[in-house]
Image 1 (cartoon, rainbow, N blue to C red):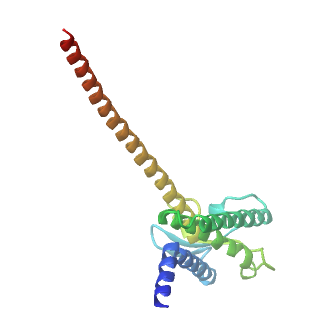
Image 2 (tube, rainbow, N blue to C red):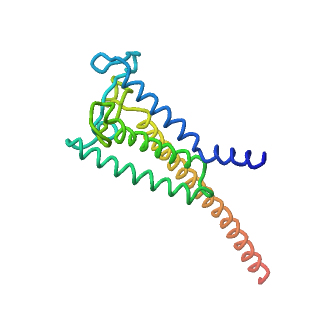
Length: 210
């Protein structure tokens, strides 16, 4: 029994499900907090380099979307559902062969998509709307001095995971290029040595024939 519990805990931590649970819980908590804190035209706190600014986003991440709020909600829900379902299926099927780094990145993308999906589905009544699927995404992190969009933890999960994957691909390509180059150099050295030995044998044969 104890062995099974230990194995289960190892699987749980290596699956990075715990990371998704923590980040999703933090995203939900902070959004709920922002909706209930008093604000001055959206500004909740000024921390110098970052503002805590409450805003409701009808678009997708970082304000991206069409001019139609209903279309934005439908598009986001469809896309987020497809991405989440696709990545979850991939995680399940490839869990044994997948590197932990990639697994963590995919969990973060799923968490980000689900985090904002929850806003769309459930937060409408809290935002003065009627019924489900009427909510807007709650954004509150505002680096006003260099970034024109306000975002949230779910957005951070997606963006950070994307950068991590890009870095992983770049590092992998560099390592492969170095490995190929080393292999080519190694082959050149072997060929050069073989060629030298062949030339020496030919020279020796010529001298013996004389």
